[in-house]
Amino acid sequence: MLEYLLRLALLLPLLAGLIWGSLWLTRYLQTRLHGGAAGQAGGRHLQLVETSLIAPGMKLAVVRFHDREILLGCTRHGLVRLSEAPAPVTESE
Image (tube, rainbow, N blue to C red):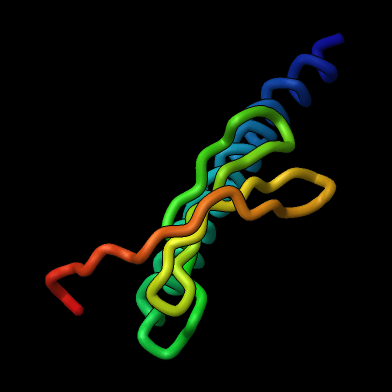
């Protein structure tokens, strides 16, 4: 019984550390990937502007494509164009 409790006392903090580390790494890589894509928008035609989760498996996404902003409905079954508008002019452009 003492051996079981000793193993439990050693393995639980190790497991908690692995869980925390994987969550931190996932968050770090997601911000790095999204930040890198937005920074390289000058040479690309398609840029993801914003996403919003509506329900599990359903999202709204705004993409910028050739000076147009397009609102897309995204589900597990595909994409649907919901609306389209001219992209707003920003001060950096």
